[in-house]
Image 1 (tube, rainbow, N blue to C red):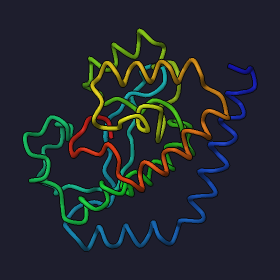
Image 2 (cartoon, rainbow, N blue to C red):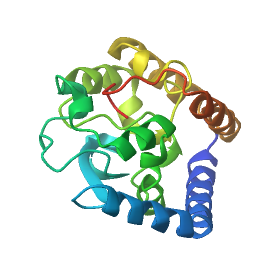
Image 3 (cartoon, rainbow, N blue to C red):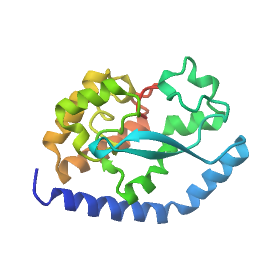
Image 4 (cartoon, one colour):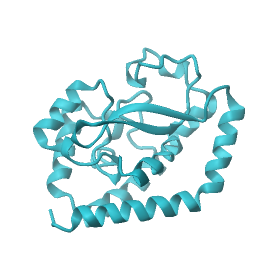
Length: 199
């Protein structure tokens, strides 16, 4: 990893997240209004995630579930997540538009555009596997190598392997390749499975 990489990555993250928030301000406000009209409850959903150095932070998403959904149970642990997901929420999740508020997490320096997806606070198995591979020592990402290699369909061990591989290969060129492949993955809805782990 280049000595300049962390600085270049942070400058890139800050500049791009700020530019996108300004550029997408009108669509973001429109989505917020539609979510508010679609079902009772707040526009944003906050969830405890594990960040760099295993420090907890609150990830931001557009709310996609009803307010009576279990608040301390991550989606992947629910017996039937679709029973709580709103019709609009299902669309937001399929298209990954629910992830857009994470631009604020990136702007604040809690996340990066590219890195291991932040583990849920109670995903002890994934956190432990990432410890073995140094993947808890970098900023979590909006997307990552695991997301373009299978997304929700991958088992925990394989996700951790890919996260460790990312740490070993991390560079600005590699990050840009992952970003471009992410766009293709999202458009094609590859590897999406409702309730699948660390989305």
